[in-house]
Length: 77
Length: 264
Image (cartoon, rainbow over all chains, first blue to last red; front, side):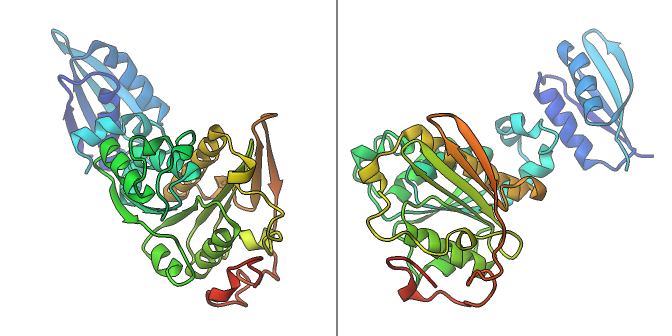
């Protein structure tokens, strides 16, 4: 299974979600996308919006001072 | 690929599940022809340009007059200029992603088919019956999706035509009313918001055609809008198998037919 990473440090809402969504459109179904964020409101917003579009959120991890990783599995058919 | 500025510019529509990056790319690749840059055209042009429709063709042979501005705000500051060229200035200021082809002349039976050929969708934003019949017939012959609208005073109507699939303008109206029986907007008046609303609806239909929302269009449906009572009425209409143009009986544009009652 392919794994991708998207570094969104410095991005704020709604672009955190917009860029996550665009990346999810690009990658293969069922592959994993790890999104790195430093904008705290996005830590709640991105998983919620991603779920609304039918993808699976596998985890949200705090990986540093003001730094988070969201792990998403792209929906399959 | 969308660049960073495009991601920001279109972010609010990319977020919409039905659109996304895929839909945005479709819009950027699409070509829409707006015939008439008056009240309906002004409204349609500004939203199509804003949405990032990649190519806009604008046809209009008229000049901007002060009596147009109450319903054609995109021509602000351009009194006396050709409307297609004036509209192009507006679009270029709003969104540099949009390429504008200008046709600073009026449509006629000799140029209409060539004009619509390179576009994916045509908007009829004209104000007279001979243009409406001419555009309809040419779009049916060229198999181009068409969104027709017309407005007078507080009222308007709109219908989307997918040639060969749904009812065309001539299925509904076989001929123009006798000359003198229908007032033009010069005689009867027109409220700016009516053209704004109907022109905006035309742009909405155009985008839906581009995005492929085929079962959600105003096909086989005439939407009649009365803005004084705020009644929006959908009327089901049907393809007429005897329609001279969409039945295939008439196979080309016959120039002498587009005068008076425009009957084929």
